[in-house]
Image (cartoon, rainbow, N blue to C red; front, top):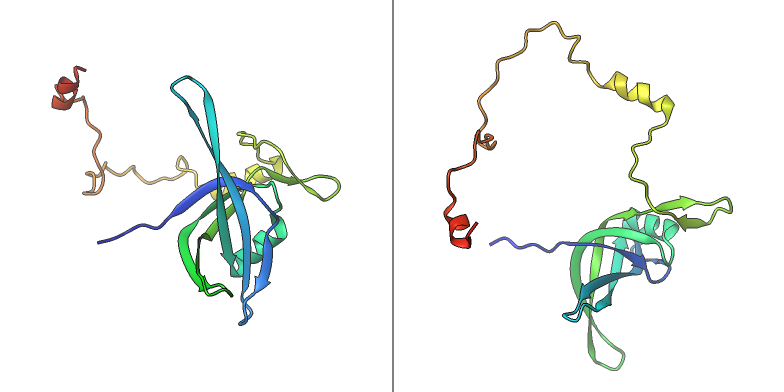
Length: 179
């Protein structure tokens, strides 16, 4: 049977990343991320709780995290959970569960005039510099200029679901729910 071990979080770094090298020379960077969960109580009181996650990035991604991330930065992290264990100097077996980072996206980041990183709200605009617009149009083939006859519509493939012309007359689940 298949299983899934996948983690996706968006949160703020709790400390600056720390990069080191393994004995065989591979880069590894560790950092913490805090996420918040908010909810309303029955008395309509707003509550929140923070959760702290330990993250580990390897190889080139470790270098990128160490060079560009700083405490407080908002970041998207995707990876998987891994629990490691070791014996402490006192002989006690210790465990630590971490997110092994496979993908990281810095959110809302830009450099200010001093060269320091600062965060500003990301805009939902589709602003493209004027000089790059013609380049995009040149790469997109124009359908209108083709001299071929349009092909007849093909039957939907097995994996495609055809669009229903009209909704079914009655759904028994809706009837049970009184809809």
